[in-house]
Amino acid sequence: MGVVRHVVCAMSGGVDSSVSALLLKRMGYRVTGVFMKNWDSQDERGVCSSERDCEDAYKVCKMLDMPFHQVSYVKEYWHEVFSNLLREYEKGRTPNPDIMCNKHIKFKHFYQYAVNTLGADAMATGHYARTSQEDEEVFQQKYVPPPRTLFRDRFEMRKPVRLYQGADRLKDQTFFLSQISQDALRHTIFPLAGLTKDFVKKIAAEAGFQHVLKKKESMGICFIGERDFENFILEVCLMQGTNWLLFQVHVKFVLKYIEPKPGNFVSVEDGKIMGQHKGWFTLTLGQRARIGGQVDPWFVVDKDITTGDVFLGPTTNHPALFRDTMQTDRFHWIAEDPPVELVRTQMMECLFRFINRMPLTPCTVTLNLDGSVWVMLKEPIRALTPGQFAVLYKGDECLGSGKIIRLGPTQFTLQKGQNCLSCPPKDTNQQHPEPVN
Image (tube, rainbow, N blue to C red; front, side, top):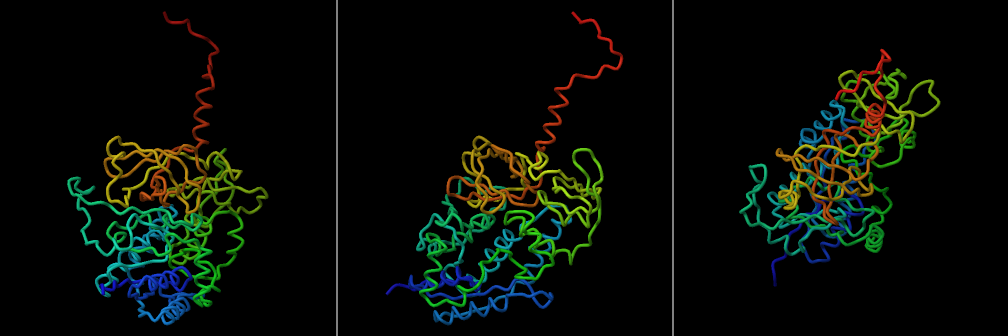
């Protein structure tokens, strides 16, 4: 009889991780369930679901006759994710803690705990994603330290593991996995890779996981759980999109940790002061601004963190909201090295998104010497936001991501420039010089 492989499964108390554990058991693996606690609920007065989630995860493990552990990463989360989130807001950016949580907590600390402490042969999560290797190949992988130079030695023969979109494109979560390390990916199994959400729920129902089926769908907010935020529903209704909803949740929570800095709302068209805001970090690009006495909606198109001014446009699709160029910080390639095509020619055609589930947009990427990239979109996109991640795809493959740190000019700025060029120069003397031969 062969060796029974040991897999540690991350248990969140939800339906996806519960079915993942069940499928691993059916595959014949020895499975251990682990619940991660990333936030100390005792510090907050809001309603926190972490204790209930832990209880639900334990019930599933008991039903499946699996060992259960709970591990705390409260300290690690504070220093590596939440502190970074505060710094990003103070810089006027809109961060994405979910991507950073996967990078630093689930696929670093939890991965190391699974392998080094629990002696796992592999780890598993309930993400809807696929890799280029079969499950059995995961157990054949050996640890290789990350490169110390900007890019890995080209003479080192090592076939990278690729990250692909899950079969259920509506639930695909490669966007949130775009910063994880190659080593962690090599040792990870995604049991839900080829399944749809509806089929996962069907499996859960047949297994008797009624207590997790009744729970609401997770919003993907990594650290704060469910809280009763003032005017939360009203805020959500003001703008569509998951990115905006998550931003409002983050801001209302972060307000407890950053001192508000009031400033002026300024019209981007004529420089007129429209009113005052409570702090520019509470506002993100594309958001509708609340201005006393204003009946018509105005939308945030830019921020000046030096003066505290927040610039507004009078329509939701104002040209000051549309851009087609951005620069990232050093790009994280999941395969560790940039694609050969990009290294050889310094340019590459691929697909882009900066919000999960937004349609993929064709783009051209240019590689810089410092490892950062410029992304030039085929069509301008509304509300490109510094602090968010530019995630790149080539077909089904998620190549990786880089944090957006610089934006190109808006369509409004370019239009003004074109108008200036098309206007004849003013002649105050009303005299025309003789042509020069």
